[in-house]
Length: 384
Image (cartoon, rainbow, N blue to C red; front, side, top):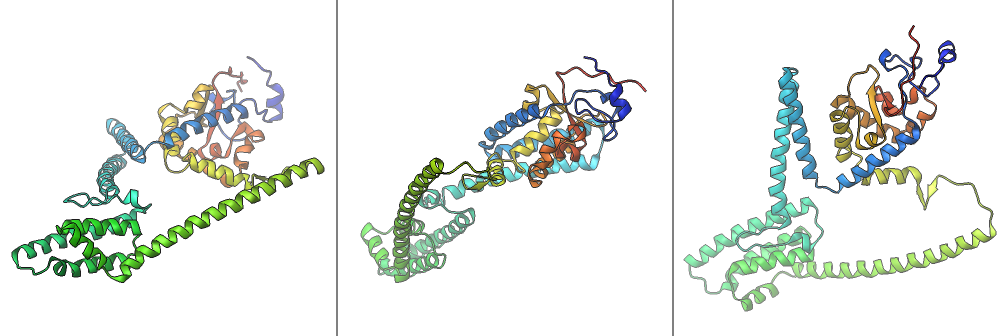
């Protein structure tokens, strides 16, 4: 395709159909390269976000593993080229730390999810209560300490004469119950920990029941209060649900009445009671648009496939640098950061491709890149 560019070159104005040198300095080899249309760019980013959504469902451990492999490959590339020795060593150290952290977290999480499972202690914290990691660590630590104390006490009882097992075990179990009260442990967790403690003592079921009934009043109150709180919370939730259903029915009827009696009003910047920007932020958070799968996807794909993600490849688009060089990992990551800047500007950073010279969005401005359409022929640019 050939286009007469005399009028454009004489007026020094941008046509927004192909790359021109008027907005900024670009490599002469890029002059006349067809720019990607806003519609194609929108379709490409939607495809990429769909892929990120699928990746976000995968384990974060897998992401960490891929990041470690990526850092190691980059350091290997520097080693082959005998470049940047400090950065090369830093990347390899970082990759090793990631792998070490993955192994440590794997075994720690395995222990915490199952509670304390060795020597008869089997407390499924996850099934008993929705606990945070810090709470799981705290209860696990208490359980391990109590197991050690019970083991030492059992050896003491076996070596010395004990007139009554109940009298020997009661003080220790009372102290353990006091610890659970101080920690304000949920009833399910407290019952499970106390149950396995009684089982670990080796007393008969009748003696265990006697010991349980003789525990401090504060411990019994802890179980009772938690049960009451749960029942109150359940009944309160049911009342709130009924109230919400009633309000929704009234609101629906009111809206139907307004539709028939009121003229349509101008559209506002809200959607179903939530702001548009809030909806977009929530959606992107669900897609993992943070330092996670999205950062990994956009950075690695643009670097590994020379400026193309899956969406851009399917639509024949490509990201190029203004000087004509290939996209590097740092440039790709910087361009990904531009998406966050686009959100911070209320989407204006994205919309500016409709009027900006050479159709640069804010992420292109930050990384000094352009998005071109590889399927369109290059316009002939006059040689000066």
